[in-house]
Image (cartoon, rainbow, N blue to C red; front, top):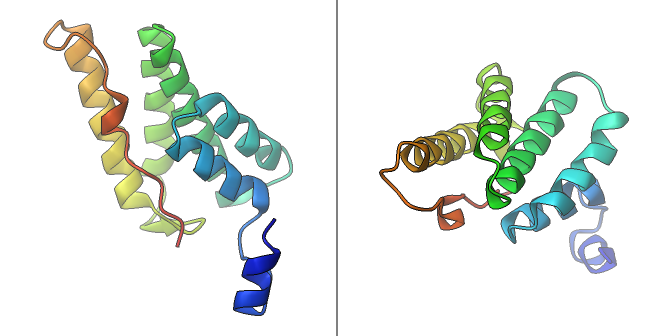
Length: 133
């Protein structure tokens, strides 16, 4: 699948296939598939990357709950992801953590507006794309 990249770059891409697949699924708003891709990596990781995978899984899981109408479950998972990312610096796993934290805050703020009745629906259009660099 990524042979063309290896040929183009002269090396294997830096990040695991499942990590990149999770990002792709997340960006396409297929949150259960993103969550599963990162869960596989989470189980075999440790340290900072393990916490990043956990935060990404919680974010995807929270958005899945919101899609299914479980706003309480969604809020709890978004808060958990936010707390995990708050402990980290500017970049991790090829991702801009400041951008991720901003995206999580935007999701959390919109969820509050829905819960308080100021908005009728949570818009997935406001979920930012994850950009791997």
